[in-house]
Amino acid sequence: MTKHIRIVTPHTTPRPFKLDEVAHLSATADVKFSQVGIDRGPSSIECQFDEVLCAPYVVGRCIEAEAQGIDAVIIDCMGDPGLGAAREAVSIPVLGPGEASMLIAVMLGHRYGIVTIMDRIRPIIEDHARVYGTYDRLACVRSIDVPVLDIDENEGKVVDALITQSTGAILEDKADVIILGCTGFLGVSEKIEAGLRDRGLRVPVINPLRTTAMLAFALVSVGLTQSSIAYPWPGRKSVKGYDDLPCPPGTGNAT
Image (cartoon, rainbow, N blue to C red):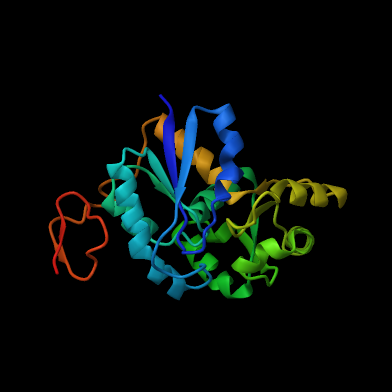
């Protein structure tokens, strides 16, 4: 049976071409992908304030996905906004590219480096690495100083900057795996790998959205999801002011 995985993009800027990033996976596995955004919240995710604004609506999309019979959900942001809360609210697997990429990275090398959009993201990523148990394997967090919404304006410049910072992460910070630190870096992982090979550096470059998509498919295929002990159901509790959000089973909104 075909597995259906939902990509939840946690901001209000349309990004329908995210499906292009995983389209070829459907040709090699019995899986289909769909994508939704959120109607209320920030236009991009670049700080903790943005994460807080989007989190309730991310969780709402996850609840909606489970009600629609979706098999797993991916939160389309390296900051994994609302990840733990969504896992409490639904029983289907919910994955964040930040967590998934870090855990895969420590399987592929001794130390990993992350190259992200802006330096203001670095403390968030470092904090997440501590929570995910991979901080002692984190070689560095580097940035290219390009906001999320400007990534598409000059792909050549972005690719060159990613190659430069990845090279520094390997040669100066001793990383042996590179994670692209934004799910908005679309269709460039192969170019980064090629650019590094041209410099004599053969290391894995993790594309976070593609990697998380296949991890979600793997979990669904073997019947695994998050533990209800680690992520307990919210239980019966009234919630005020979120009438437009779907509720987990057994809960209800109160106005």
